[in-house]
Length: 286
Length: 142
Image (tube, rainbow over all chains, first blue to last red; front, top):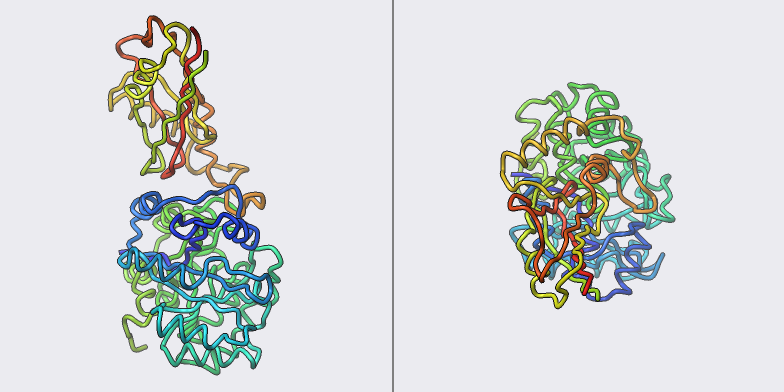
């Protein structure tokens, strides 16, 4: 079993009826020269990568750019089409006046499983006080948050907003709030690891392919940026498999991970067990 | 006269040999063109069009030889993020194997049929799947 915890369903044909909306997504997300594709093609990609479920992430840019890069209702539609294949996340622009209502609807009515926020793109510091009600709403519903962290390729995304050190106060103030600093907050891998070894509610994911081939990038991540035994010894409960499709391909990240030496329990954790715990579907005492 | 048709096919693996011999022959035989040429061209840069004997062992030998010439792990310059795509490259093996394989094949059309040897199968070869792919088949002549 493998769960991919980071997919942007920008080109999923079932939510691409409006070509102007797709064009908005492409420009806002900064992904080009790709076209909508159907379920058969996305499932072929998942099957080859041995991915059983994918977490689908929307992004609400209402106040900054006037639209969504896939909205919460569209995520719920995809999940309702294939509930055994998809895990639906919500998003909210935290500056919206109705942000908490958006989350009540997403979690309470649509049944979405977590929240996706991108501080770099949505232009907020995660440790700002006005963000705290958002986190408390997630705690109320026991929903985790996936934060984009580190470098973002999206246009007008400011990396300073998504630096790992901006998240420490959130980890301290809300120890029961499970959150993921996606992409190991690359290039701030050491800072991300610092938070993970101190705060068990901080997770990360493997979608790190900013330079080099998948093999070179993942090898460097697991043996140079981190010590080669750090995963086995300390981080094996907090790293989740993720590809960041459509930017990176699932099977290439998996192929690279398969070449990394690690203990079976660490690999199982990365491939699916940590995702289940992150989603609140399994509870494990530390 | 010119008759242009397309074949669509979805690969399910990164590399796959897919025979399109029958489809190409049918396109030629349904065409009103009786004498001329048929051109089979891929619409992509990480796929190939190949003519060879349709045997699994031949496919294996060709695939293995291409991988020896173009190994998965090498210092390819294309292994980086492409801002113009918003996605990573990392498919150099597909591009180079496509180059070695070629992007097209041509056959004579005589009396409404393809003139070819009995062992000549036409392959569409995937080098960067899984993906939905397009092949152009153009018949031109009289």
